[in-house]
Length: 151
Image (cartoon, rainbow, N blue to C red; front, side, top):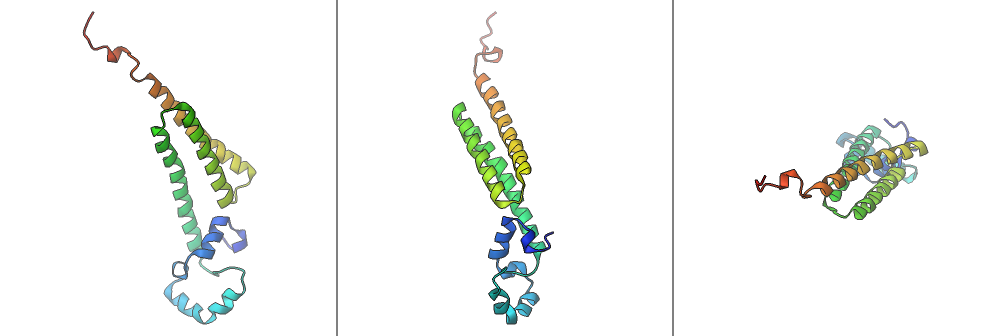
């Protein structure tokens, strides 16, 4: 849980700035804040002054969705690419995109960023390597394709 807006990552800062009050405050809290809203928001420091737990939970869900999409989209896309060179090029693009998203939306330090990128690249390279091996061996005229029954 975040204690102060200065101790947060960019995603939580964006959520703090752009989520509507109806998401961040309950109805009684919104009614309580109504008389002092102009004074609070005129300070310019932050847009919202409460419910960091809601912002934190929303950010955690969004990071989870980003993680799922960053794994499933490349696997589906790489399944349909037949040329090995294009698969490797697409893998490079996905890894660069993952690294940029992680670098801009999180507070990961350099070592964490390199570690996460290496792990992500390893998952995609293993997938590309396994699909290359299985696609090159199919239809090669092995024992299963010789069904003429001749001795």
